[in-house]
Amino acid sequence: MSDFSPAVDPRTVQLLALVVTTVFVYLAIKYSYRALMHLYFDLQPVGSEMLRRAIAQMPPHRSTLKAVAALIGAAISLWAWAHYLV
Image (cartoon, rainbow, N blue to C red):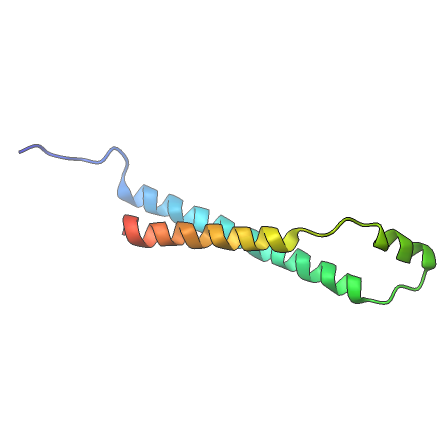
């Protein structure tokens, strides 16, 4: 019979998985806020014609896609933590 000891403490791996999940959730909240603020400012009437033309030339905003990707990353890391590390 051999004694098996893991190379890394399981609590350290669990903590690392929770930190990664927390970072993904933070990024999702950050990009969701940016997407909502971009939508809010797009819907506001603009008084100046020059400002309207400048806003019309702005590239499309990708914060919504980044927020969804961060939420998917958080879900995957949380799923891995729940199924493999606990």
